[in-house]
Image (cartoon, rainbow, N blue to C red; front, side, top):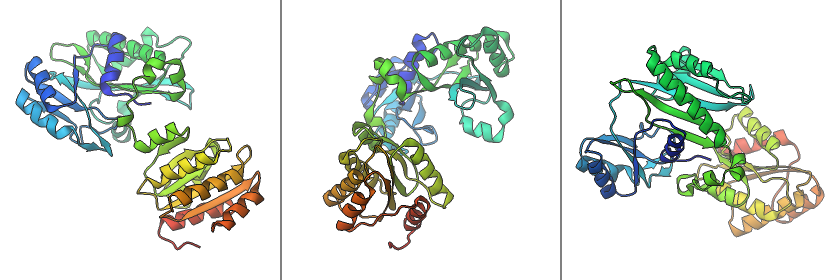
Length: 381
């Protein structure tokens, strides 16, 4: 689960991280009022769950309350990666001498949280990794002991030469690690971590992503969720108890089981296609899940073909077939569909589909190849 920058900053502020003050506004007039309170020169930052806000024009410096109002009127309502900006964070402008990057991510390969720090802050860490990987230092953390002081100091010296700044950065990194662990994060980062002309080390931005599996233990974090800032299809899937992640491709995938879903997406890529989503309808036999899944997939205008790949164990294939028939009667499909069914009640499922004008395949590779071909404009069989 993503949370907004202002929410992440509040969590880090409570952990002791030095963060400048800021207020959230939802109208341009509110922004102007906050700018006057802060002395005129402020930064107006779009609050939306998308990266690249600055490049999209969602982060702007204003030198007066009137300019802040004008900027806010342009940012509020703008689209950033398909998401509408409905609120902005207004903070006093800061004098910056240098920018660094500090982040923690759960690394599945080493099965530990891993610190990543770089003296090249203020830009995408992916860009730094691609162009100048030597400017990134990675440090796995043993969760039995946490981030040890000597480790924090080691990271600090990679960022700064001045001992005072190193100590300040090391303290911030220990505070960041504690916040990361206490809130069940899968990612937490400060970009940029800046030094001011008088030598202070301050966090100007914050991003936190919370592991969904931790939310039951952290209702206070769950309460921070903002559905209006999330991809609408992902909100609909969560409400329908489906596991769904929207992607950028054109082959809509509906699969039962996370492992099969990943294998299906791999095959779509292997045969030259691009999956439009990850969608796992789970192991239960519930036709309504299939109806909801099809509704979510077909709401994506990028989808050019739909692939059902069902290996029936606990999931009964006749229930899936019934769901497909019900969904397509409610909302006739505008794109071709490829159905691969095998497993529990397979004969019944095939009969249901044939009686309603659908055909079913049993070979997974052939089904995926057909879906990819149709997405590229091939003719339906």
